[in-house]
Image 1 (tube, rainbow, N blue to C red):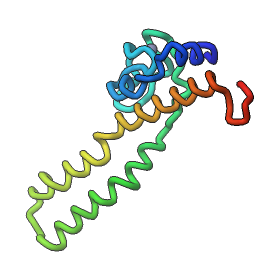
Image 2: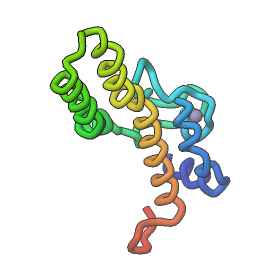
Image 3: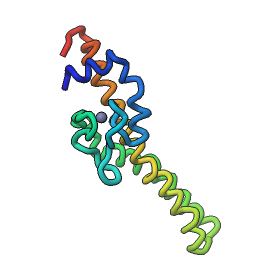
Image 4: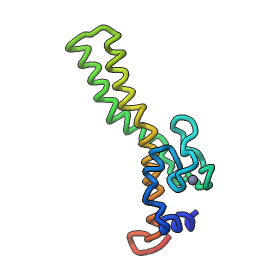
Length: 136
Ligand SMILES: [Zn+2]
């Protein structure tokens, strides 16, 4: 795999992995799907057989989203209830979509972007070596 990544960066393929990943595609070829299900990253690309083991984002983005985005969404709902005391249907059309838009909706693109960044970092390490001048 190391040779594949180095060769890929030299060819210039590492310039578009973020775009490919944001479309839910393989960061290297842009053809194979990156996800199986909603946010589970596949073991490898179906088109170019790139091993997605480098991605391993686990649930880090989900935890970050819950900590960063869910708090303002919940604060909005609590503030709405505290200051306006609207009927339940108003919460259903304001607070619930806001929570969805700030937590669930960006989860997949964020995981894809992190996978693409890891792919690019791996390519750069394979091409230029480590900071101390040694090559892997
Ligand atoms: Zn691929």
